[in-house]
Length: 126
Image 1: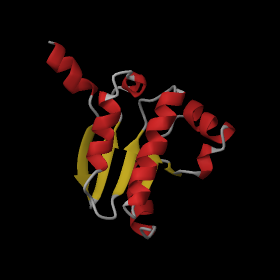
Image 2: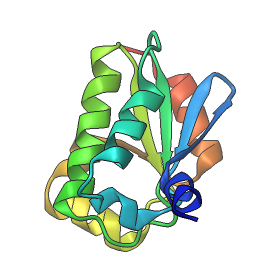
Image 3: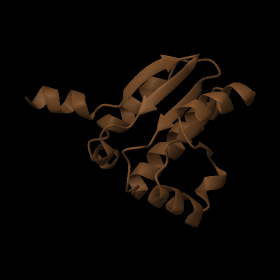
Image 4: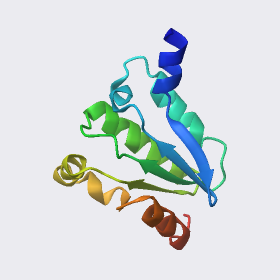
């Protein structure tokens, strides 16, 4: 049962049109003190040349400083590899937080998955 819970808490990833789509299915895992979730997110983007990553935040209604740190670290890692990261399906309360903290300027944000894929294909990698 414990293994099932841990697996369910890991981010879900799929590859679509050359883009890694990372879905945050368990928003409370963003605050995971054990750092296992954060490490899993970082590993998902590791080892890719010029990665294109889209992060689905549809289930995230609250973003703590720990969650913000995870997204910033992921963006930094993707940028270091010459890639791009887009957040999509960002709920209004999370978008408001990103605007208030001026982090909205740091991230590309798309309305939905289709828009995120189009943005990543239209935006050249670094």
